[in-house]
Image 1 (spheres, rainbow, N blue to C red):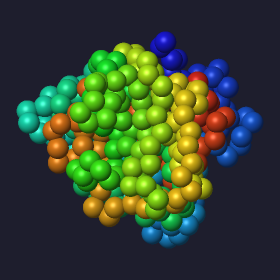
Image 2: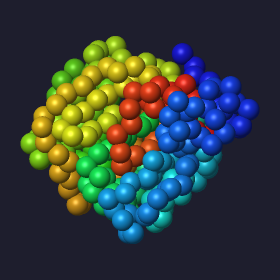
Image 3: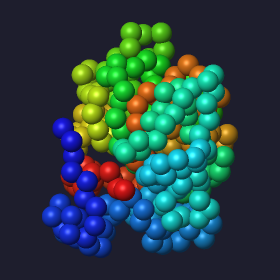
Length: 274
């Protein structure tokens, strides 16, 4: 199903979102993908996370080998596109199309600082998989270091390494009790169409939504425990070529707080910020 994109004030209002970028029933819930930090910066007070994303990418450049961080939170953390092993990429009307390439940031310390201070995180992606079955699992959006057994977070597509390629979405977080705390949707969740995938972790519990619907949840009782050498990336595992995501990224963002069910549904209804 193609989701309407709410661009401009009239369109936002038509989607039930007021012109301040909030849902009428939740005055503080930002749905603006480029909303600036509305409190202290991580350098000022890492314990006071913004309502908006700390990094956000709209993939609207249309050319070149870099995509900007449009969160408004300094320092910016742009992604540089790389082609390890000869992987390809292209720009299209929906965003950044990846076929073996990945885009990575060399400076996402603000994500580590703010999210480990808050103890909560939500990761969000709008993406169009090129195929419904991918293996690895394929790294659509990840904050990791090339070690396939440990990460800060990953939105993955498909099966585990060595398994038959699958059509599920999975969410992994590094915690004090598990280096790869995972929840996963059922099979047949991945479509070759624009989809909205959101994962959250807070207070020892994780939840995964696909297209505005909760598809999985779990609890391990731990807290975030992250690696300091992790790299923020879309399209693949940094330092490796064997887990590429094949498809188009239209939006990716990280919030250092837990979005609730109503906020996720509102963001799905609004479509990818452009």
